[in-house]
Length: 331
Length: 271
Picture (tube, chains in turn cyan, red):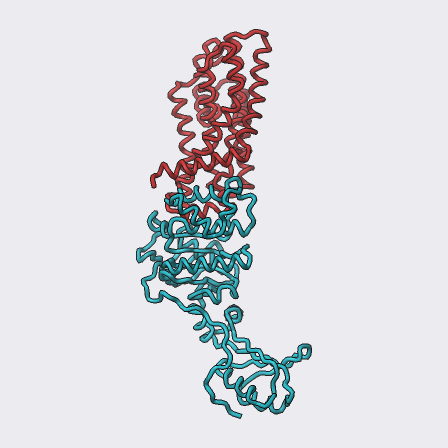
């Protein structure tokens, strides 16, 4: 049986695309290297972030995500490479004007237990040249107005994280550097957090965010940069990365009323597909190259009641991440 | 945003933090108990209050200050910057649009205010009793100023180590070590030198050694400023105290140098 019909039958995940491609980058890194005694953390990093762009920095623990952020902020000095902030070369230290564009959320910040949330923001705002009104606004954005007058020692981890985000928003930053920002947030908090980021993006704020919660960042990032072995081993939109990686699609189905193994094998032969049968769940699992997926699906569905319930799993960021980290080459 | 606004914002936050965690009241009251004991003991020895008695009380209080205030300065400040580092706020504030050295100077100023308030709490009661008994405010004011100053030197030293080491566990050990060195071991060392040489050491050399120890400088300065000639003679120090300006210059140097080293170091963090 041959199938040539082109129309897609199953739609699955899709990444958001950048709204600001082509704009002059607010941050450019080229050839950035950094080593600590006995360990080369970053070999040669090239990155460019444009206003209004959300880039997710993905990588296993210890791959240098936090180090890279500290290099951008000037908290560490690179051994090699060049950093441009707003088109201006940044040396080992950041000028006050360069620092003024940053909003930084460190991975963990405990703040000051004896101050209230409002006092903390007032303190930090005065160090960031911000006014009183911005404090109320920042507290409202992160949903902490109700706890503004409570001391931080009574805050939960998620509330501290929200406070951290609120301080990052003070002073109208142009570039947000968020290190594992959704740590400690509950699902509704995460949802609200990305809504806030969406609004900031719309205002032209560039965001570089590190995370290893792939399912969370996949639908929300414009671009993904995968940090591995000291380099950006993959970079682009989620769709592009997945397409480039040619990760296999997985089709699972139950036997239909007129199931016939010979007929199935005949179809599979034509579509370079691996087949497994899961006894417990009674499911057939087919693994095929993405280019064969549509044709295979059509063939399966065209066969007379060969298949029952059918599930298609398209590869996502998580599969991509696993493949990249297992050392398989991507083209 | 002016430098002074940032400086005072940091100092203010530091002060509020220590007011709320109970440090100022708790330590101030403990200090008050010690200083009241000394004051009453001083009055009690003769059963009457006289000029000589005030001198004795002040001298005892100077010794109390030598033992306690350096320790207070060190304990107050040993984790000044290391604490920010552990809390994650040091990196955060280093990313803020102001010179990071201001964080250090602001913190120094805040801790200085905390210590001043603590000593005001600690010295008010004995001073009030003494002044009520007919003594002068001047000596007590001088005692407060010199006490705050010796504390400020140890705040500077502790903050310097806090920036250099950035590890609270090590820093508490260093703080205790510094206190032992300057308050206990140094004097024992000088006594050891005098005994082993049977006193054949020029006084000028001993005086030079005093410049290496801020608490020794404080003792000399306080005696110079607060004790009358009779008391100084009684202490065997007549003609032995270095000139007042030299003492002031020395304690000023002891205050500024560690803070300057810390300021330089904090700006160079991560480089």
